[in-house]
Each structure stands twice: as C-alpha cells, then as structure tokens.
Image (cartoon, rainbow, N blue to C red; front, side, top):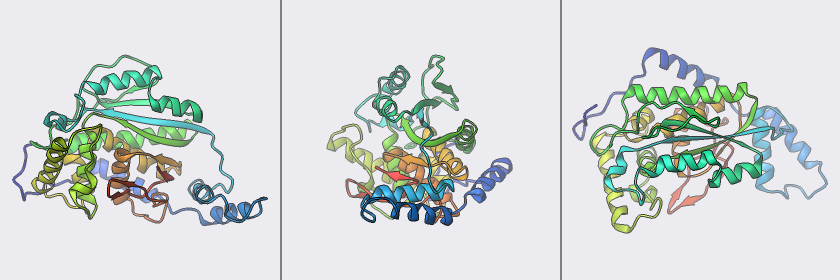
Length: 325
C-alpha cells in the first residue's frame, strides 16, 4: 500500500468473513455479572477484617467475580501470551537499540532468561511466545508458536504499516489464541510483547485514539536522548496528518501505524473478554492494544472497563481489563 496524500483517508472495510467473525465476538462480550459481584462483596464484608480494609485488592476481586461469574474466583491455570514482531519504523532511529535485538530477546525468553520469565515463575504461570512478525528465523521450541504473518511491519513514515489483510490476520490470530486458552482451561492471561520500535507505534495509536497531545503519549522508550525523542514526536505527528487518523476508526489506525504484535494482542483482548477470562494489562504497548479493543467493544461497562489509572509522563493510561500497573 502506497502512502496517501496528507488528507486522504485509507478505507478500512473488513472482508465479509472477518467482519462476521469480529461482529460475533463483539456481540458476545457481555457486561460484568452483577449477581456474582454482589455475592463477592457480601463474602468480603463478612470476613474477619475491617470493612473494605484491603482497598484495591477487594475491588479487583469483585471485578474478577463479575468477569468470571464466580463469586469466589480462583487463580487456576495462568498463561503469559507474549507476542513478538519487528517494526519498520525502527529504521528512523526511534529506538536506542537496533532491530536485531528483537530476535535476541525472543531467544532469551525461550531460555527463561527474561524478567517476564522470572515473574511468571513466581506466579506459577506458563509463558507462550508467539512469533507474529519477527524479522528472523527462530528455532522450533515447545514454548514458541510460529505464526509469522510477515517479517515486521513496513515503515509507516513512508507507507501504511500493514495491509488490511495483514491486520485482519493478526486480529484473527489473537482471537484464536484466546479461544485456545479457553480450551486449555486457562483462567488468567497476562499480556506481553517484544518488538524494537513498538513504543513509536503505540504512541501513534494513543495519539490517534485519545484526546491528547503527541508529546504527552510519546516517551523515551528504551532510553533515547532528547534529540531522538523530538524526531519520534515529529514522526508520530506527521503520521496522524498523513493518514488522517480518526478516533472513531480504530482499525484504520491499527493498520496504518500499529504493529503485528499489537494487532494480535487486540484480538487476544477481545477474545478474552468474550470468553470471560481475566487479563492483566501491564505496560504501554499492551495498553495501546487495549485501547484499540476498547474503542471496538460495544459494552464499555463490561469486562473491558477502567479499573484504575497510572501515569506515564503526563499521560493517563487507558482502561484496564483487570488491572493496570
């Protein structure tokens, strides 16, 4: 797809099969189950402790009850879904590290050497790495799912990051991962990602879907200097104008400036909400995926809803499915 002129909007019309599937998923996302939440609150109020003394922990437990329809939810089987992909925008010097670090980090995750591996071990969670677009050939590994759609996105400074078909494939993959988690009796999903340059894509998505300034959602990533940060902000600002991004058209934004791993995570979030699986959304990239899903969800008072807010620079984070750290 060639880059359109500044005020030309790229049409995003899902092909009929994908449209029907996504529509079914969105219609299947139901509000939180209030009877279970009331029972959870009554249970907490009868425990030997001052009322509401556990603060946010009680609020989270009640929300999880509403998601799962279980007044006394259990942790059960836990899975970290870590989606990895490269980004063409990395060629513009927006990261402190080269794109070659993406496959290196994926290999480290498979060896169990990443911070997420240590956290997962402490929580008793399994880690499943999904190669949705790493620009390298990765070895066969029991914890790696090879689902490569293409070797990284295109440079969205020059052209749209993905074609419509590629974006649809990534969304569909995420839905499949959520359905597989349900089949595997997974009761908690934690979202993870890896992709050099993906903070730029996430910033572009945030800026296009939220009423905020580009500078408020564009950070220093993995440690770039101020000069690189200014370039990063300029690239995001130009992309908003180039593709005429509209907060009412989240899929268009996802295609034009998003990432393969972000699109996949968006599918996971929607599928997880449909399957009533609590999800932990942690970090800027997964929050961008959540924001796209939130814009698509017809039930903002349901599982895809705000729990609490933290700040990254001057930016308030988007709503979290079960918690936002």
